Length: 90
Image (cartoon, rainbow, N blue to C red; front, side, top):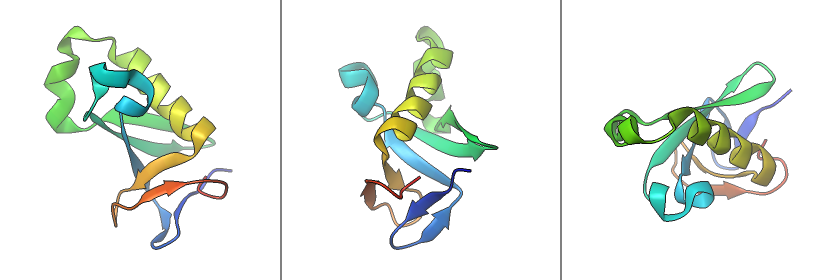
């Protein structure tokens, strides 16, 4: 079972990831929230970026955000905003 963890904050409900990490410049600065959903990860676009997705394939980018967090274990803590990466983060 997954757990999202921050060295400073312990177990956290969701993490943040900048879309640049998996979408290059098309998603640079666009932030995603990634949550635990049972035994998998589920992403959503931060509300202030929702309008930007009116011309993009939102479902595709949400899948890529979840996959990125799962495979690389690199993200930002939603509480302290520190970057987290490495084994044990998930």
